Image (cartoon, rainbow, N blue to C red; front, side, top):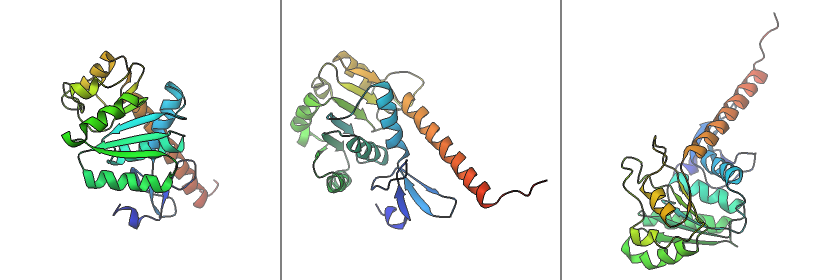
Length: 220
């Protein structure tokens, strides 16, 4: 949020402005902009590979970080009716939820700590979640680790969409394996990585086209 104060604006992919961003870049006119590449790409991937987000209930693990925040914003834009964010950073997590509530006052948006204090509430949340997204980084270096305890994994219902954003050579880690054992449909971060790169390439092409239009080469 300290960075946001120095941006010219927060530019959403597609031209609209928003409040969540996960990267910073300079446009052809020299403006410093905040973009939501990850959130937009995640939604694009989900709608292509899984289906509609309208009316869904979601839990984002590590949602106070830039990626989790951006994905939450984009999911709410697509009509997700309820989002629960968990994080070990309580102050930042509550700040993220407060900002999302300002932008989406009709949505059900909650924050739960990743400590034992909110375990019962988080268990109930996972029981009713259609989508659970791991943005924590847990399971990236050590695939045997999961951000959820065995007890919390047990709360996940059959048919839940479990997504892990860690990019690993192995297709699954403990989070996905344990989610699958509960009957969840599992997805790793490969699809998002491809979608993000596609957006980045498109942005680079657009920037080059603007530069060429601003500084046309003389005809030979």
